Amino acid sequence: MSGQTTYADWIAVDWGTSNLRAWAMRGSTPVADAGSGKGMGSLNPDQFEPALLDLIDPWLGTGRTPVIACGMVGARQGWIEAPYAKVPCPPVGASSVKPEVKDPRIDVTILPGLSQTTPADVMRGEETQIAGFLGMTPEFDGILCLPGTHTKWVQVSAGEVVSFRTYMTGELFALISIQSVLRHSMDDAFDQDAFMAAVRDGMADPQALAGRFFALRAEGLVAETQPGMARARLSGFLIGAELAAAKPYWLGQRVALLGAGKLSDLYAKALAAEGVLPEIADVTEATLAGLTAAYETLKDAP
Amino acid sequence: MSGQTTYADWIAVDWGTSNLRAWAMRGSTPVADAGSGKGMGSLNPDQFEPALLDLIDPWLGTGRTPVIACGMVGARQGWIEAPYAKVPCPPVGASSVKPEVKDPRIDVTILPGLSQTTPADVMRGEETQIAGFLGMTPEFDGILCLPGTHTKWVQVSAGEVVSFRTYMTGELFALISIQSVLRHSMDDAFDQDAFMAAVRDGMADPQALAGRFFALRAEGLVAETQPGMARARLSGFLIGAELAAAKPYWLGQRVALLGAGKLSDLYAKALAAEGVLPEIADVTEATLAGLTAAYETLKDAP
Image (cartoon, rainbow over all chains, first blue to last red; front, side, top):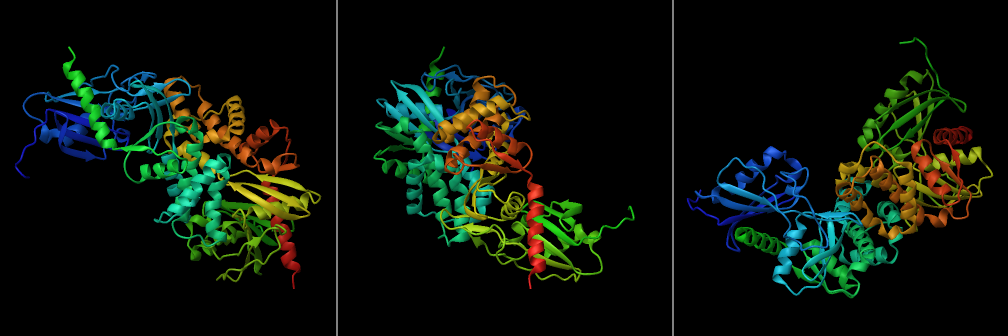
């Protein structure tokens, strides 16, 4: 114990299916942060408040601290349902909801996600990142790509989300590489050239995807595959097939990647091979900017 | 205990990754059968003989009983490796291998699988079913489809396997429906019309596959999806994409489905919509016919 106390004007929370992350905020500046694995997927409704307090208790003062949360915490199976706003609409600004809390020191607000009727699609959490990105890049008109377990391609115009589409590429990669028969062919290496070749193959002939997976296993049995080839090629085939399907989103458009780390780098490389040079923005920064904007709006509301 | 004893001339064994099945044979006729979950995937090399004896002990007499086995038991991670025969070649007939056994009452032979260099592919077990099918339908020249966890499409001509291709459709369906976020949208029902519509969609636009999965989840959230729709549509999209990729195999060809049960029925319906009316053959019958032919050949060998 350092004896030092960090008070927060308000608390920003990104609460997904698998993880919970919170920041103690002074204005728009994070002064402390904390995280846990208590994602929405592992909690019953009455376990949300204790899971939150476990993280933020040290930041609470004697008054009532506003807590602004985005993500799957607002799903039907979450703490309390925050009904979707339907696109086209601004990414954030629709009615938020407030779960009942026992602790008088917190006042929790959960931001709603976005839904689309045709084709059916939903997002929770990404809308706040999009709002934050647009706050930092107000003139942006184009396509946002948010790589992840469920990668989103989002058409943004005049400050509104016009349409979007979700690809389960990240989840498929995890399932196939960790749980399918292909796991026997995977090692920790990742060959970048093999990745790029597979992206090209995946884009050129996406309908062959279904037949490519088992070949990755068979190549390891009938030929001597180099380490790092199978993982890179699986990733490349999946991202290539996604880019082929999402082509109407990115072709000839201004594209920004909202993400960080290796996965965003892979999307950037794959897009660059198609002549698209995406801007890259930091997703944590965007999340905090979006939550801050929501906090400012809610604070000024009557 | 019935007190009744079943002696076998020889014993037929189909030993896959997840299951072990054995038949006591008199000539080409099964007179008893037994099975267990002791598949190759769960056994170390020294556990194969005890797992086999657990099942077949009651069928062993005082002499030495031949045991003919096909399947993943001959994989590198199996009991003993039975190296692949390379296509084009007859489905069965290449050198088999004999693991060392401790029990003097058994003489075990493991049949090899088939491999293909380009595109890389392998099979273990299906080659014996193909041999059995060809024994029962000796004039067959065309395409065999063996639906399963790893569905095989096999070009057969003049008694040889010319080429083949494996699609992980069954494994993908299991992973996505049981382990992905789509599991929340699945129920036990299966709408046949929704399946057929999804097969058509999957075939017409296979490159859209990557974007269809999450839509199945989203439809359940933004619209009221009927029970049985999501499971049937997932199956239809995957089988439709497989049929699109495998089209060079079945288009304008004589096609036989070697399988049984609901999965083969789905493939038959999907193919029928494309004007292909496959013959359907029983896979257990084919397995036993293939093992019997191998037993007869080995018995007569010098």
